[in-house]
Length: 231
Image 1 (tube, rainbow, N blue to C red):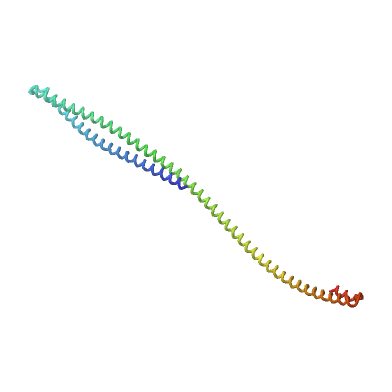
Image 2: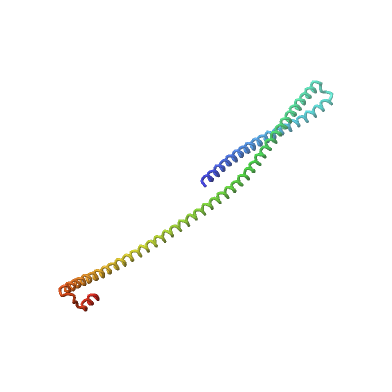
């Protein structure tokens, strides 16, 4: 996720620098077009002025040529001036044409840059939307995984608590059984001790009886033997 985010940030930074470069070039073209437009307007004013001067001089030449009081030198001088003005006007027209062509070229360049800016903007917006959707998918995926981890941890915690309770219950049950078994062994031990004492007593009585039988002969009281047997 961090690598994808860093890549998206890097691409956005590159696109931003590209847009800034195109914007600067477009601004430069706008400035050049404005400068050429001013020069063109200035040249147009000069050409208009020269055209008017040509018209005035042309009229003067016609008037002077038709008059009889003007010498030939004056007419030649006026015609020379007219030719100079015509040459200057032609040069101005040539410059106007060149500047108009340059301005048109710059205007086309400016339009191309504006179209490129708009295209780049649309591409950038589309990529941003795609990146936002991708980041949103990643965020939702991370949230789902986080929720799964939380549920897993909760389940493990509940299972541990259940095992702990079962362990405590078993320990309590074992303790109770141990106490019961301990008391039961103690009672059995007491009973066995009591039976053992009685057995010893019976053995002692039997020994005495046998001893008495040995001294008195084979005639033994049958009632005494039955009494010992019952005990």
